[in-house]
Length: 387
Image (cartoon, rainbow, N blue to C red; front, side):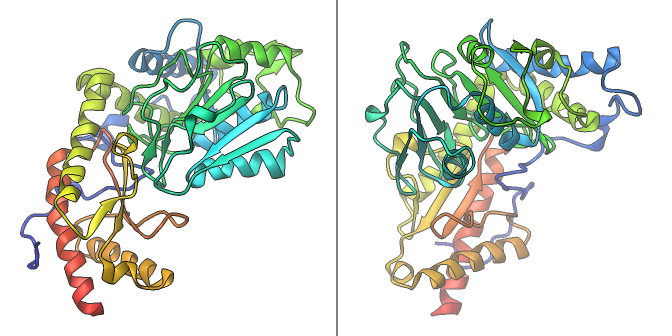
């Protein structure tokens, strides 16, 4: 265990789980070609927006027949747009094992007030029993729990002949984990996660089944303008060709295009997944040989390769009251922040106390490895100070 202050800091100490680190080598010069001071509805502006959509679909391997749109309000806006426009046509089952999944449950129960809603939950660190999910219902889930570090290990649990639609919040999975498009009807994510883009924009990908739902079902509740994907019961295909519902930031768009170009340069989706896997493996290997810390995700196959969540398992720490455990974790993260070794790696406020280290594709494995001795040093320093 490292008891003296390490000599080498990570070259990039940005380990935030959102907004996430910019791609290696990024600078403001990446935005020099931004389409600014002009209408986004101009021919060149729409072409730039469509380019982002087309590159997104290409890198992610989105099949023909699926559509993709740039929408407002990040992943939250995209997911709520899907819920508000499509839910209510049939019974619903919502899966929640971390805070964002729990947020969608709140929308379903308290906002939309759906009468036939089945809520299936699991504690942080676990998945619910996916074999028991009822696919005669619309099913909502997070592909990767950003605040728990628990992901679905695969999509084999989703039947091809399902009756309901599947809604996957993939904001910390897209571009770092394989998504099975045959099993996903609605997929949402944001620019600021795996590719380190700028905030405030979300992506909404729909299967043909989801498009059919939009054209065949009208919700009982009123829809705000920014949620409307149909007009006169007809699907607004133009929204999925670059004609955004609201005004997008063309500066943020340019940054996303730069991130997509970088993604292609490192080998596309395969290269991005390999980078995230290597980053997460460095932490998983370290926790396996470090007795006082463990992965929050209990089952190895469900451990995230992006939002790696850790918990302290030292009996002297776990024996403390919950507020004292929380204070200890925050002190460790705060000391790392103060030293410039890691920014923003405290646990999410609703999760069990510990650390959360972003390992997405824009992170360099060398930086993850350089961070770990600092975590050891910070842990020992706070432990000794508190004893």
